[in-house]
Amino acid sequence: MKKVLAFMMLILLAFCLVCCGKDKEGICISVDGEKSTGGALTGEISLKKLSGEYTLYFGDAKGDALQGYTKIGNINENTPYKMEALVIPPDAKTIIVTKDEGGTYFAKIPEEYLLNKENAFIFGALSDIHFNKYNKVAQDDAVVAFNNALDYYEKIGADMVGVAGDLSNDGELSAYTKYNEAISGRSFPVYTVTGNHDYNAYKDKSWQENISVGIKGCEFAPNGLDFAFYPNGPDGDVFAFLNITFYSYSYFEKTRPVVSINEQIPWLEGILKAHTDDQVYVFFHLFMCGPDGQSHTGVGNLMNPGGYTYPLPFKKGNSDEKRIRRFFKEYKNVVFLSGHSHWAFEMERYNEETNFSNFNGEYCYMVHIPSVTEPRWIEEEDTERTGKNGELSQGWTIYDYGDTVVLVPVDFLSGTVYTEYMEIIVQGE
Image 1 (cartoon, rainbow, N blue to C red):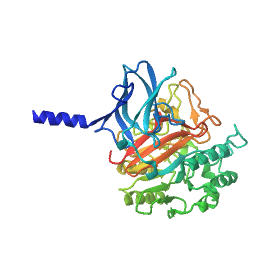
Image 2: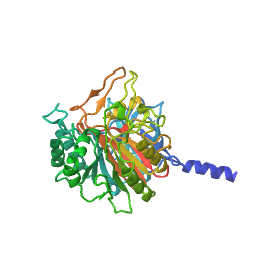
Image 3: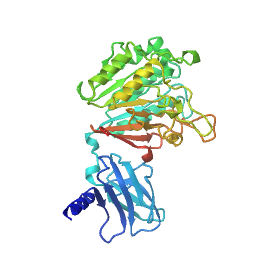
Image 4: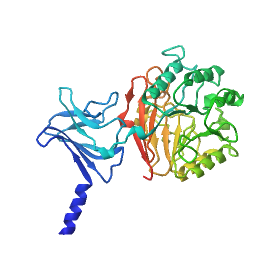
């Protein structure tokens, strides 16, 4: 009998129930303490003495909805909301329910699951700026979009911004001039890598003369192009910026390595071997195919029901891709951030791995960064994608707390934070 009682007590302790007052109507949060972690909740949310359909949002300490955040979901008296590792944004203190006819109620998120953003290293992840390519809302839409994103990161107190390449339209000098003007005078460093549109600038050395020369506080690779940033010194977490040193649209050159097997791959491997106990972020322009070798199953791509997929993958089986794929299977402490395809966050509807995945633990975590200037969209039966320049401008805000990393997807034009696409990484899980 004592063993049964002890077991029942353990079950009760594994759940935390947060409700309104004893006889008041409102909301209850039931947290599964064994499956929840700092920054993410598993359990359920239910209504108490309320009827009808309500909408769930994250709120601040006073119970006011966080500005810009999309809804968590819907709830009614008969259908509790099931939380499956629901990511808690850094500013959230409560969960609220509200409905159009009036009536708002909230419950506090248990403090042991909150993360204090004052203890985080905060950085932005952007990609595919493409100066000189778009002009929908201004003479050079990328100037507007990029400056607006950097202003957003200034406002939230970011420590760094990383860019996954494609600054230009075709490697033109004016693009790099605009980029340098935009990042000048910022309170944080901005680092970038070459994309396929920047390849001509790498070939004629103008990238090295106009971008590499401005990179400060970093450790360069022997090739003088790739580099590593150590925000807390060489014995802590590291950001590795790996550049494309070859790119071709020719079908016959698709098997040629886009990075050097003899120079760049050993440099990256050296960083990975030296930082097995740290968080390693790798910025690179191209996404990888899925584990099955298909481009549309990888993080960063999709195939809609109409059969369209992005046609320029980092091909599985290429000599450089094979080495990098092996690294990402071996070093699970890596977070690989890439761009290239421009897909908007919402396009996850066609491939649940489009934005973020580690493929059930087979790989390190991979993250797709939409374009800050022209996120791309495709409807179900379309055979051609649509560019949303001037309508959307997307990227990630990432909070590194040490053992936990929270990824928050943002649209910089509207200020929207996409609650449904937030992600969390917990080391060792």
